[in-house]
Image 1: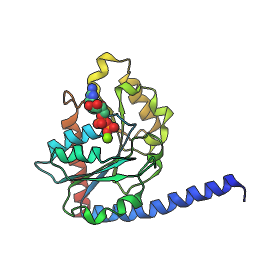
Image 2: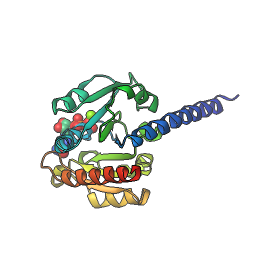
Image 3: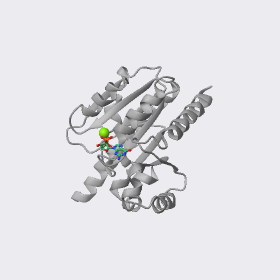
Length: 225
Ligand SMILES: Nc1nc2c(ncn2[C@@H]2O[C@H](COP(=O)(O)OP(=O)(O)O)[C@@H](O)[C@H]2O)c(=O)[nH]1
Ligand SMILES: [Mg+2]
């Protein structure tokens, strides 16, 4: 068989078996009433900082856990533990995305009574978009310093997400980032996207995002009732 065809078959096989594991994870999480959220973005766009901030806001009323995906180091999990939340680190040792089988291995350690399980994917706007992790919601983050031209350049991340968050909104007055243009472009790619603007520095948008998450948890629990 020609090399290219073989490669396509291997990729289809990987994605197919990933989907099966992801479906089983989703079923188990949803039966337990756990709302799982997969966060996608480039390195440095503010995923861990956002989780620290919303974790602090949610943790008095809800049980929150975080799975951290990185190529190397336990640094992000340590940051999350410092704000008082349980965190499980997955190091991929080179792979640019998390896969469902990596989460399946952790499953026994995740308390069954969690309300929210956040999954910070490896920093990358490309590969993580192709791998379902069994999440109920997918968030794509784009920070103001990255530039407002990204949705069309990385469409898959926007097509497969439910929520688009413009992070580091405190930098809007200082940088040439057209938030309206980026919002419009993202909605042209995926009209169903819910859009938020957040700043971990001045707190903008964090309460709205937490209220949205609480509403989504209630919807999941109502489905189970
Ligand atoms: N100005 C500004 N900087 C931020 C904000 N959120 C995160 N940062 C900074 O951006 C850098 C990367 O953040 P981090 O959460 O580690 O990004 P991650 O790689 O996506 O997890 C750090 O230096 C943060 O302090 C924000 O809302 N505003
Ligand atoms: Mg991080």
